Amino acid sequence: MKESIALHKEEFLEELKDFLRIPSISSSEQRRDDVAEAAAWTAAALKKAGMEHVEVVETEGHPIVYADWLHAEGKPTVLVYGHYDVQPEDPVHLWDTPPFDPVIRDGKVFARGATDDKGQLFIHIKAVDLLMRERGELPVNVKFVIEGEEEVASPNLPAYIEEKKQALSCDAVLISDTSFIEEGQPAICTSLRGALALELSVKTADSDLHSGTYGGAVPNSIHALVTVLDSLHNTDGSVAVDGFYEGVPEPTEELRAEIASIPFSEEALRESLGLDDFYGEDGYTFQERVGIRPTLEINGITGGFQGEGLKTIIPKEAAAKISCRLVGSQSPDAVYDAVVRHVETVKPKGAKVTLQQYIKADPVSIDSDNPMIQSAADAFEAVYGTRPLFPKEGGSIPIVEVFGRVLDAPVVLMGFGLPSENLHAPNEHFHIENFTKGIETVCHYLNNL
Image (tube, rainbow, N blue to C red; front, top):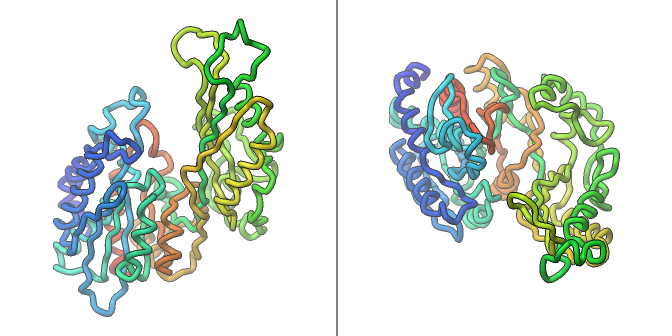
């Protein structure tokens, strides 16, 4: 298989570059046609790979692409999930090369979507392509469900999974949208934090007011917003919202030892990020804070005059975007209700406050001893010569919980990215070595099953 991958490497990379040129930004209404183009491109790639029943399923948002090959009688069925949508490219001026004009340098392909998730998704398409070319058949049954809305929290995919539950039944759900611990050290993620995203808006007067005429006598929306935001955390780094920690388990010594066993240097990371110090809950390490503890973060603030120079006003409105990462049995709905109660309690006089919820996802925990996951570990070890570790991931992939619960199947998070690949940031890239070895690893996995 390694020889076949080497033979077709340049062909596969050119195809990947074609995929990456499509600016399939799902959060932008102006890119709707581009997202549709990416769906059609994905469907064509699956047909080329020998998949059958290829279908572009329209939704109220962006399309879902389905395909399958179901001729391995008596063999397991693997459902491959991925997404063809990408994050916005902003800020464009921080990219070394145009974000949708992929280039290869230093053994990496640079473009938006390179590691999240087009490059990793394409690994699976090329793995079944190679197996079909060499054998004319696959060692197991394979289904693909590929969406165009992961970056906007998959609003239409859960209903599709529920509706097509029988048709999507499988023995394992295989996803490549996570990363290694470091270069050369594979990882199979065994937990994902849940998510809650919301926007907090503050309004005061009906219009902006002159700060000379009204200053010191009327409420200022930005002052009010800052007061509310400052109240969300205690001085020890914990979240100050009453009820926020309901459902958060106390970490066992065994769990803390498992987390500590994963190679990691706080000092090296701090220096690489240009930080003087870290921040967070007292009594927890960096890895525990981002893996097994919940968070509440302020992601953006707007309000008042933003242009060049000065405009001496008292702004009538201000807003902040907030996201929470959840663990254990925390409920996104319960946390949202707790934040609403907190904001209503602490808001200053004269401030009218509203909250709007955008994203919610339940936390996920996966048993690393499951045979489907151990077989994936065997495949990693066969190709990379190193057995993967089983870290707790601080991020969220909302659809993972839905797949596991509705299909009652283990989810195998077989990621091939690296933490250094700038996903969601300028100069996103994907290591070509992991692209080619990823194809080999997936082929091994399907053969193992």
